[in-house]
Amino acid sequence: MSHDQDDERAASPAPSAAPSGGTRSLLIGLIGAAVGIGGFYAFQTMKARNEARNVEVSCTAGQADACRQLCERTPADLNACLKVATSLITSAGDDPKKDNGASLLWRKACDGGNAEGCARLGRAQFNGRGEARDLTAAATSFKKACDGGNGLGCAGYGQLLARGEGGLARDEKKAVEFFKTACDRGEPRGCLGKAVVLFNGQGVPKDAAKALGMFRKICEGEDADDKAKAKESCAYLGVAYATGQGVEQDFNRAAAWFGEACEGAPPSGCLQLGELYASGRGVQPDPQKAIKAFQQACDGGLPEGCVAIGRAMLMGAPGLPRDAVKAASLIKNACDKGSPVGCTEMARLELQKGGIGEVKENAAGAVERAKKACEDGHPPACTLVGMVLSQGVGEVKPDLPTAYDALQKSCKQGDPDGCGLAGAMLADGRGTKKDLPEGLKMLEESCEKMGSMQGCSMYARGLVGGARGKENIGKGVQIAEQLCVQGDAELCLMAAGSYLEGHGVKKDMRKGAEILVATCGAGLQQACEIQKRLEQAEPDLVKEVKAQQQKRMQAAMAAGSGGHGGLHALLLLGLDLLH
Image (cartoon, rainbow, N blue to C red; front, side, top):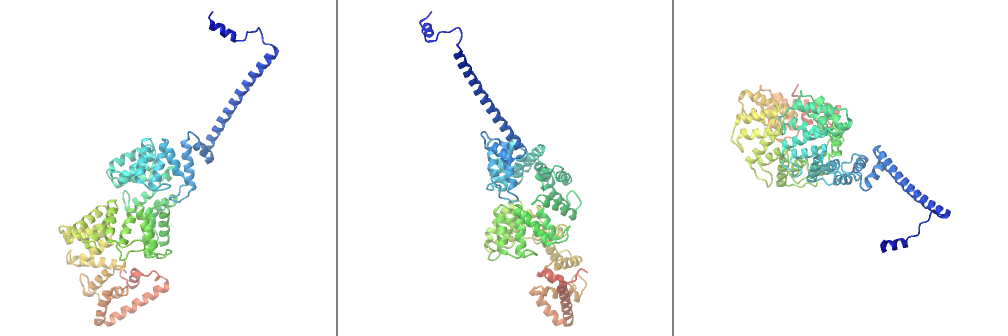
């Protein structure tokens, strides 16, 4: 036996055959205490687990406080954070900028690797809600979400690709792939994006009829949540019926679809609905309902809705007092938010002598602003560039070749006025090689097929001038009459002269005098000068026509229809051309 073993044995108490009674009691107490302590800890652990489970159940049941607890613990329950963020967004109401801190939770979830969080963060960055509007950051968030398997992220990234925004090169074919992936993952926005590119023929062969079926399926879907997510689909149905793409044109049905989109999930469809109420296509003309729809679009964060309100304020409308300063502010704000429509309208204000409100006169700046809006895909901006460069304004010198190119681009993108102006330049050989037949064809199409008043105006001038021979002068006079009633005083003068001289139409001194007197009454000085000469030659005729039109004016005022004012109203009261 070693010394170590001896030492160990010596240091240990000698074993006894059995513990004494006192020792046994002590041991039992110690064991009992140990068992008691273990039971207490086990109880506490079980209690904590039950409480945690109860919090999870409460969060699943939709109790925000429970979800908040789960989100704030370590490690955080990221799905709970998403639920808290959703409740915060809901509590923020319709304010397009306020989110009550939801974006902070989207970011927390995204940073933690939650793809849904990244998608929602991208949407916040795209819309500027709770975050500074940052399309580049949105592209990064959407791509991260898509790579993580989230359909909304794929749809958002596809949208930026289709537009060439967020620092991404425009790539419509690649955008289609992302929309398809999103749709395959059950994201309605992806299916909507897929339908839109099919409707427009972007990156895929155009098939409006097939796209229409997709729009209808999304819009009329039974899943209310999905329908809310893809709310624009109802508005696209309205676009299809309004333009006659994939279906017979029907403005009544277009108005119904726009109304459903606007009422159920503004701002979708609100802008288009307002335009229909303003124009009276498919619905009874109602300026107040138009303003209401435009306001819904504006309040819903759609800059173009604010631009429409601004336009109405510039002119004055029933229920909306004229306020040029406020109008300029609305339009400028829309442009500052990146709206091509807003920037185009702001450019128009910059071309005004002296500017309006906070928008200062700046012709050169207006051209650059319109060029950028044109590059961003807004055809009327291209038309504005062409108009300015075709004649020069202020310090901006004429540049006919560039003007013609801009107008051709506008026409190819479907702007009726762009087609008309390009046709006029082609017919005259300004900025391009002269081609009178093709130029007149473009003018005719812009007028009769596309409904451009500018195109009709120039087409009428060309026909009355004999551009298509004597046999078509009468057609030009007829168009001039129609535009005269709509407020084009110069064409009123052209029509009056044609009837007074028998140019292309049967000579009709009375009809010519009626048009001339009404045009003079509307304020065209040149018409008043010609009227004086006619009075010298035919004093009784002019006197009789004046008396007759005075009676019409008084009757209209008595009936309450003379309160709208303006050239258009005066011509309507003075003329009876379309009987």
